Image (cartoon, rainbow, N blue to C red; front, side, top):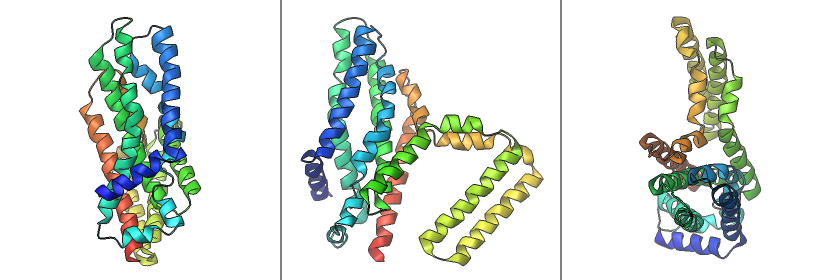
Amino acid sequence: MTAIYKRELKSYLTSMIGYVFIFFILLLEGIYFTAYNMQGAYPVFGSTLSAIAFAFLILVPILTMKTIAEERRQKTDQLLLTAPVSVSKIVTGKYLALITVYMIPMIIISLYPLIMMKYGTVSVPMSYTAIFGFVLLGSAQIAMGVYFSSITENPVIAAVITFIALFLCYMMEGIASLIPGTSMASLLIYMILAAVLAVIIYNMIKSLWIAGIIGVLGELGLIVSYVIKSSVFEGSIQKVLNIFNIVSHFDNFTGGILDLQGVIYFLSVIVIFLFLSVQTITKRRWN
């Protein structure tokens, strides 16, 4: 894993992708920091970080798009897959290299609250709690980018899929508000999701019978549950969709609250998407 980590880190630090990522993070943060905290004399550093969270929609896809997809495109993934290293170590090494690149601008940003202290009273714990939450937010979204890079051999497609996924997560609160909170609306959406899940399972295992049985059982289970107690479905789809609202879990950190539930959420996202990346590569390895 160490060799892979060093290889990937060197690749990012000697390529334009790493420099572009670091440059734009620091550029946007510098602009908002100057406007909000310095010229506006606003002492809450977390609001500045929250303002640039949208930048991850573009920067994370650019940073992660070649992580695994480029290996597949150039056929160099065969060298990794035949090496005496487990797939989990390969994915972990690549992910840690990306996190190291991400931490470079974060270390510089960590100096900003100290600059603010020279000109006024600033809550240091509040500022660094916000920075910690920002690190978790970026780390979780980078893990998502790694997974989407593992499902295709085209880096551009990987970037587009990552952007769409992050954009949907960013807009999830608005999307949830557009959906009626009635039981019937929730049931219909759950049935659509069950059908989509069946299609995904079919694409994974290529067994129409198994995917069909899972899909039918899922649809029947939803209908039976609705008939027995429809009130359970009322407003439930909003709660489910809010789980994917990754940015909202960052809000407490910007207010200086060390949200343990948010920490667990971000760590769970990282583990889940890295696990999915490992499974995707393992499947291709045995095929």
